[in-house]
Image (cartoon, rainbow, N blue to C red; front, side, top):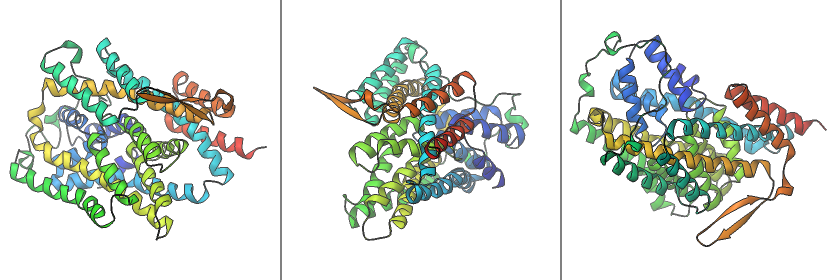
Length: 441
């Protein structure tokens, strides 16, 4: 448990950084698992919806120490971030209007904009290797930004197109890539504690898979069904449970793609929070350990805090945060425990790899939409909607430009792209500058 707690505490910087930490500790330092098996597990986790780093932790924990090991590893990967964001959420709703806190979040928003643009560049450079992939990314951007197409539909269509392209053997859909490992000398499976052989508990067992899948399905869906029956579909807790359960099934492409979907629904459909508050939530997730998808916890917290009647707002918000985290991460364990024993059958499957390649390309367009959306709501205080037949989109009112936000965002971009300064120093530096801007007359 100590090793997994250490990994969780060091898991900053998004999935690439988190996977690098796991690789350094589990493969290079502890030599519990070899390079080949680590990368094979990572490739499987990248085929799944949800945060691949957390799922990789659960997979390796299961491989090393059976079901209990997977549960401990996966839960510990989430716990530090959950507690940190919960505490910061209390600060946000209780003291968010205080000048110091307001200034800190003002600076964070500008820095997060630079981080999201960096994500567009990083994922795009890996995923858009040919004109077909660039076309998929462009189509995804146009669909979500101008036409308001739902994120799950974009993922579904991209996956189907990639699968068919892979089955047809089209070279443009050839899979590959991923986050990769941390580099260094290769540690082979034969030189590790687990060895080259497959542990007995890791062999395909249909009875075990059905049993564990059934248990996890009950744990996941029983609260959702109970809320639907006893609280009704219009209750905020029911809406949180159903929305984030749906999200858990379609969240391919990492936290930045998920955030575009969450923003589209939580801000536009449910009205749980304002556009700028999505940036605040991402800023909290970026500066705390654990998966970036923990930003959803902040959304659930604010939704319950503002929409619940008949109980303390803070109690409701805490329950909303717990419920959001529960329905977001229990399915992650389901995907791992149900599929991991059969994962060898996926090795070398060209069609599945091609589907993932196309989805990743579409995600670039979705993240670009997120970057544009964030830029509009960070740098300008007012927007207007341009409607046309079949869709519409927001454009900024140029006279409402916030010069201070623009200066901070440009400074953060220069720090990230020109001087290669790490994400945490940039976020903290901008937060302090934002506080100084608000506090100093």
